[in-house]
Length: 399
Length: 86
Figure 1: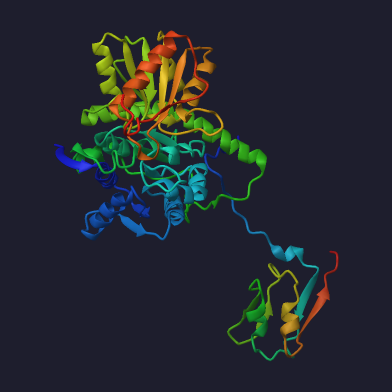
Figure 2 (figure 1 turned 60 degrees about the horizontal axis):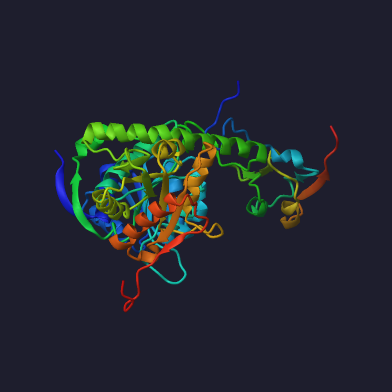
């Protein structure tokens, strides 16, 4: 029997990590991830973690320690945010190209400058091509469920890749919600222990790890790495089904949809803003506008087929990005969705929105205006080449 | 068929006998040796070993012939001799 707790997103992540029985955790505190480290350290002090807990001097050290620990063949976990992730970039790339199934929560925080500690997934999105699997979630229950699933996905023999479960700083990390927390025995039955075979520091199985390698062989490893990302598409779906069978909750796997089946217009987005989008969808549905939401959960691997299937028969779509893609004029998700459509020869009118950067609130009013604008843009048959900015009216400017 | 590797690893590790690179080799005159052990301490590849009776010998598997032992030996008991083609 699971128990119901009232906890914030960071506690959901910490509990999920503990329930998954990692053998080594190494982490360095950084806002808004700090409470994850505090909770885990408290579990450890209370003798309730059952795991090595390494309090390191930097994020670079955290990922380096986990690289070594994972090479001994054990399950590893960490969490970070923004500047910490940036400092971790070098061992971050190595962890994926060594094919080490490390699980890391990224508590999304905007990148500097100007100085900021507030939410925004620019940190992890910018590293989307560093070889990790990246899943983005919407609420605290989804954080807990997906973090437990993450170990099973990344340790799958067809995958063997590290994985990020990303959630919005403050909007989820510090927001309190009802969360069902499963029993240890239930998680144990779902998640078998991890034992490494493909790469391991073991005197009984001597191998040289990460030797100096020429380009012809390096390209072989990149090709296999890219194939593993594609294999992860099916594994993410399968693990979601297995989780639903065990715990009664499915999050849709690669993507989730809300009132999308009979929709003429689709809003595409990810993360916590999907809650506001669902409300705005309900409001417009009440006025007879057939609009729905396509929530992208898996950004890497990108679920091209699932996106194409969701858009089939629609008149057009709009994308709400909580990030920027410098040099393209739009957000990252808008670029990703349009690239997926090109591969199928499909062409839709589409609207691009950027908003909610640096923790700025994507209010219901702003989201509703994006939905209205999407319908108008699609009706006009236009496709945005530059993003429209979702900006709150300044005080004194009445609307 | 060659084994397929998922991650960049190498198996079938073998040690390279770096002594093969040598162009000159140290020859120790045991009668002149004062058994001080300086050669053992200075050898950068640990090619010098000390026997139970306190005598010293130089193993040639990994000695690259750098000549540091000969230069440091205060008794001038080590001379460097040019390797001949076999």
